[in-house]
Image (cartoon, rainbow, N blue to C red; front, top):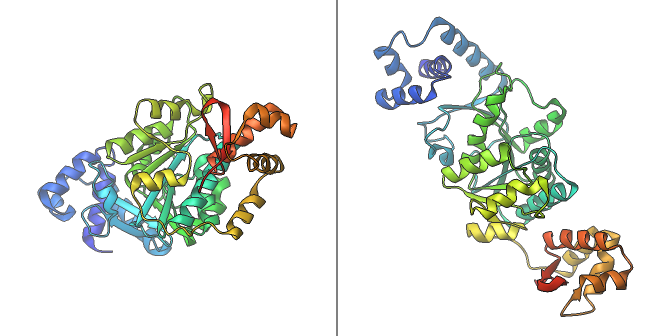
Length: 357
């Protein structure tokens, strides 16, 4: 490691609570070495010792390092005024993919939210040639998004709130290990830094800044997901939110984002792709694809779809209840899930029909 890099790491550590000041100095003098020449007392012995320890860790574990003035720094993040000065990365990582989508949400999602998130990622992977899913490996929607990306065979980037010598939460270690071969882990924190509360808020700016678009899947009225959405809006990123029922506490934050026009309403991957004007590589539906789709439906959904296929103009929800003899609550829930997956379409007045391709 060069002396300039050691100086950069030492400077960032010494001014870790005054990152804005560190960045101003670097912008003025052009390099950490020049900063030290003009301000020799700004970095103490402890910071240099910490930098040397970090250099050893980097070399032993094959860590990549990125400086905010270098050409290989994530170009999306470079546009953000409060981007980290130094980033540490491990894995098979392309930090500048063609399409980057961050997915965030509640740590206690409903089954509906988890299923929608998984299907959304799988659909993105099917329709886009180069897309990377970004999230924070937290409980709930974060880890669902990472798992779905791994299942789809597309890259996923984990943005933790700690250094690269640990994984938090530890229960998600297997997901993180898999992500190293199919993406990677990117953090601004040196090894030994623990996942403290304020680190989670700080890392959200990386989740927002590295993406073209941020998708919020279920969020209460307050939470980290809404902070990420606000940061994304400040960075001029496109924000999308999955709507929920008006009295659904788990979707109150998403509904407010949509109501206040801070986020675009989204129900499927095609909505995001169209809004972003991305070119798709999706194949036209075939008989095989339709058979696979039908195979993935639940027994109740197959019954409802068969009935809807009988009438081109559709059926009223009450008629479907009578014809299928299924409970009203089950019919309503299954129709909503099929609509989210693009199988059926809800019409005014409680009418439903098969979605037209």
